[in-house]
Image (tube, rainbow, N blue to C red; front, top):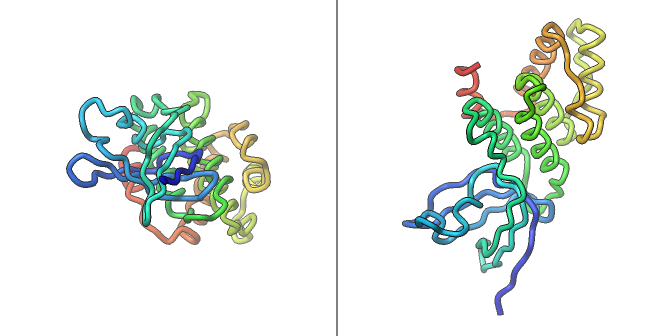
Length: 216
């Protein structure tokens, strides 16, 4: 008798596997970060092909194999189509997904990171929010969610507005993260602190970040 499990999550990345299949990396509420195979996803007209695209968020029914999962059904609630038509926005999304992939593990409680990723992709799609601000907020909050946020840097002279914004990002709920904007001067301060902490706590070279640096 086949064993199935249902999860809610988002696809972080996908790779070709074999002649027609795909392998996806899925960040879920129930099981943390897992990998799953999607059989025939690269065949023309396959019903699961669209559900293997990065950023796809929804419900997945997985067949539990001896050593792996296989996607049996997918009900996608948000494809984030805006990112598919926004070249720069797509790279921000890929960068955020890379950070989520870096931080998360299988069978860990990764609900906060999943929520942060989802809300951050929504923020990238919102014209009123500068992508550079969204990036700063995401980086700082990801560090906080991982339990590594060290507080306001004591060795830097920050404006009162920048210090307040950093404290707000670290302490506020994810639902309220993207409810403010700052002027260019404060944004530059936030970028400096976010880069400082990223280099200190994320010991990894993110490929999408390197590409973003050439585009921005």
